[in-house]
Image (cartoon, rainbow, N blue to C red; front, side, top):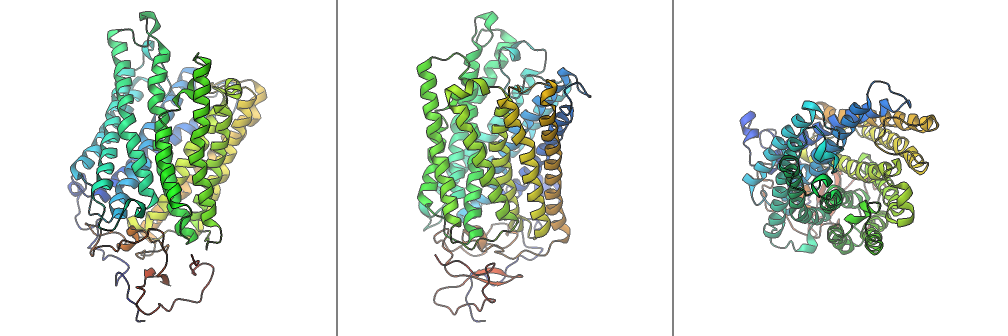
Length: 570
């Protein structure tokens, strides 16, 4: 074979990668390597997700019957507060930006590290301290305010509201530092030849997310400080008995929290853009539209917080404006969905584990987006507000979107992060179980909400029992599917075969470094080209994966063309 390739070897020697070049606890605890920090974030957020998932199963077990099983009303309120707060603040918000983002952003840029490595490590320890503070406060005596800490109840309840909100405040600083680091990194550390429109779409999504983190998170910090001041000093901001206005708290909170929805979902959308292109082996359709739509979503996200408050007594004109803006924000999301579908058209779509998770995201997120139209319309939001319809919609967007996209991203970049391939059959099985379990859990909740079942209630009328039981059975199936996915990944660490440099045939820069990457990511300067140009990529074999062939060199003698190995012509 006389083909010139970018790297002569597909794998990094065991002693020459970021995982093994320095061993010991302190080498990890004090590391400035963005890849190690990303993996530490990954372990942390997955641990938080596991705890929140167990709490969710406890809630669903309690709801199997309309009467009390093992949780009192007070305990039920405390458990769903814990579940929601851990899932939102400790998992969904930092999962993709802090975990996968830390690992991928410098490599996809072709850089050695982020702009501020020490600030990066500081942001991780702030997350860790905030998480410990947050969990200790909430578990010590129990908190039953819900994850939103709504006033006026949060200003009067006896729970550890001040301590818990201080934990949120610390977590906010971690989010701000991460966003600031990514903005500076993407602005200043792009290599020669990488213009804005040669960046992978995951970087566009990360950049838009970072803007939201930097601009919106301080509002949350100020809000929780005001809440703590209200409880301690009784200065009359949110508490009516001191001439405060609890609706003001809702405005402050949702001015952050609705943009925060896009902190959760935008990185997942960036992941899906990568997955759709690579596993269809076809240039992304409408690159600039998808890139601009990420920025548009970030900007629109600051303008639609009022749709959470249609029943709070706002003026009619104000609610009409917020409703119109809510419908407008669906346009850039729809642009992404239609461009992903167009990317698959006439592509060489391989239905492997990663692509199945991407397709599951597409289906689930679409349902979440479409059901949001009922909650954005004034006439239908009023009867559906604070019902299980909202619970189902929220989970289809946050879990069906963010979590499923996150899982797809983990499977996609797992060979790059660990240097090991996972079992494809069991990966597909995990996706199938997750998909079935998720829909069985949350589709019945749309019906429950439309029939008037309020959320956050531990007790309900017997007529709702059958649907609640279906939802609870689905939750345990979903939990089992996630456990299988975890088992597949952990098994690969010990029994998986060595991963080639480019197992999927990706064209972005992370596939030009070894698996796992060396300490400074690239042994040779990466070749910057169009991020989704598959011209010159040829499949060699299972050991070496896909390799780039210079146009002036001889062609690689690839295996006989099959739908699985033959790239689509662009």
